Image 1 (spheres, rainbow, N blue to C red):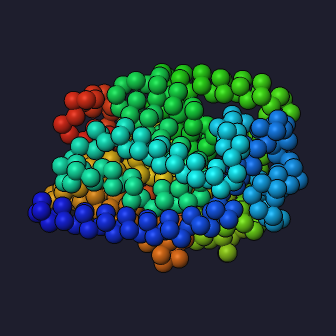
Image 2: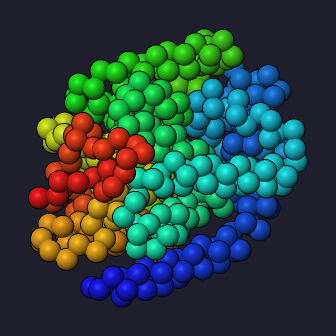
Length: 402
């Protein structure tokens, strides 16, 4: 494909995806105003903190009553599956009405997305040569990010912290990488596998930064909620991490691009749930063990963490933009080498596939197949061989494809 034709193709695809994002926001935001968004959980959590009721953070009846009074009245289950320290972030939003708080958090998420783009932009140098707006378009046009904006989820905050950790890692600032990773512990289902991989890779400075941040967060949470509140919060997180449940939570889990979700979708109707969970856990352990034999790389760690995660919401798939953007930057326009073409094509499919799943009604869990496909030809290189910022002449994050 010639340079001009490639440029035209990426512009057309990006514009189509951007229009789809705008249309999704146009129809999704009004529903969120009426309380039909995940932000109602975070808003209720902030109100719980402001009312100094942290020990009751896991109490169903208290949370249901607060949500009915503050957001909308119904008896839908409300489980505040977040950490005590993250609850502090949403206390200021509780001073506003629900609708005003939603708008304020929407703006905050937009600002965090802009920060992520600015941090990551120098590391997407090749994409910028194809089209100056392409590095930003890769993030702005990625469908899970639109879902995170509509739902008022904390997934964009998670993405920003992960991008900061990734950039710190590639700049050789391992302690900072560990600190940013530790700050993202409110989504421990992703941070713990990443930290585990860096432990297996013997990146001790990252592990020490992560451990120190974890200790500080635990201390703050203990001071705020006491032993009872902290134990209740941990219980709620573990409960959310338990095997698939029925009803609304089952639907949410079934929409995740993870090995567990994929196996349940493919075999859950013919094999018992316990066996499927056991196979998913076994495959997750094998995947982590395989990744541990590769050279340390943050993009690889993120991809593996997403695959082995057992719970979350679809908006958390926004993290997938990190490895997708890195592969596209390394391989977009490459016309030789079977594995290079493979990784480029798979990354391109992963970029548009979430929207295709949404429009077609296909489960998002099938994205896990493409994610596994992205791992097949990859040989991740050491950050020691990566040019340091700002001396960026070539792709920094993902090279050395076989």
